[in-house]
Amino acid sequence: MDQGNTAFVLISAALVLLMTPGLAFFYGGLVKAKSVISMMMLSFGAIGLIGVLWVVYGYAIAFPGNKGTVAPWSIDWSAIGLNSLLEVPKGAAYPPLAFVAFQATFAIITVALVSGAIADRAKFGSWMIFAGVWATIVYFPVASWVFNFGLAKDGSFAYGGWITHGLQELLGVGAIDFAGGTAVHINAGAAALALALVLGRRVGFQKGADVPHNPPFVLLGAGLLWFGWFGFNAGSELAADGTAAVAFVNTIAAPAAALLSWLLVEKLRNGKPTSVGAASGAVAGLVAITPACASLTPIWAVVLGLVAGAVCQLAVDLKFKLGFDDSLDVVGIHLVGGIIGTLYLGFFANTTGLIYSGSFAQLSAQAIAAISVLVYSFVLAFAIGWVVEKIFGFRIKDEDQIAGIDTLVHGEEGYVLIGARV
Image 1 (cartoon, one colour):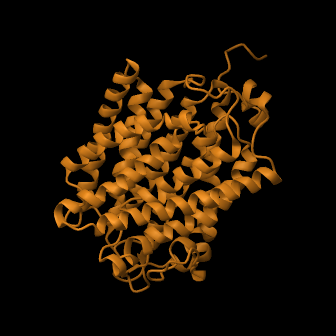
Image 2: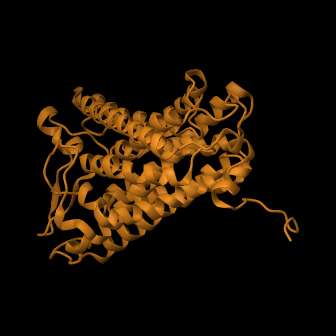
Image 3: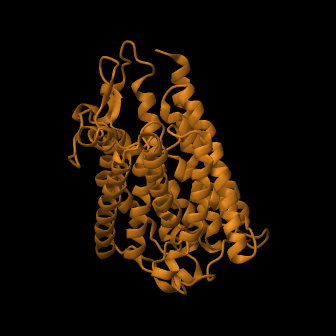
């Protein structure tokens, strides 16, 4: 066992787990002061619920070990509860449970991302029901489509994701998704759009009606997300090597460029570059580089960031034009950014992209991957959300939205002045 690689994977897992509290700050700063506890609890609820489900059966669904399956469901029954993964195979680079831990953090952050679309109007208990069901029938299978590889009993890698490997038989190349542009960002963005439609618009929904109550929280959250994203992207190499270094550099380059392009477009459109815009631009660049971080030269990563920052800045206003209330722009940043990063590889991926190979095969694979995950996630998320709304009620009453839902749902306030309570 390579102790260096083991340490690298475990540290990367810790970094990715930190992203979810970072997301809680990012989302928490964007909502009303009287909804900040409720918003942050949606992320922390995901940590608790998905962490348990992953151990019990999530990993067994996401990594069944079968090769190239296109079935939405498959399960390795021996991996239920993870007892079969306690031993380290001879010759393995790291313990199987290190990989399990790393992928657990991906499942957690993906579910938490969805919550941004339903800020200020969702019941916590209903969210937890949705999160558990959606993770079970959407995220875990889609993770299998993309990431289904791991250590076999003999210490070798077993590949089986039909999106990243199964398409090779059809097109000669599989889709590239190094760290989760499809499985994480398109998946979460599509589900967010579905939930936004199910829950409907907030009271008084219109452009400029809801402003972030705490931009410093937003900047803090973005900083924690960016820090954790190095584990997300470079850690996906599962080894401290040259590929991880490329992914690391690109995780600096793309979001830095996206931050600048978002601010430029914001300045041209609205007259002022904002701190929330800087944070949002960085996140848009991080989203776009996620699938591409190991397959682009740093210069092409900068170009991707410039494109993603500008396009996502324009995309966030689509909700006002189309009439859906994606509260915290999960669609405009994660769905659009994930699609941009995924399709960009069809043109600029090293050796297989159109400009290098002259072939549309890589672009075709990327498009199939993006569309497949988008449709699967949207349809099932809409159905799950609709059922939860009909049976349990998902949406908070309008009058409670206006008053703020922290005290109603959690019995707490985000901010209490000293001496205000006896």
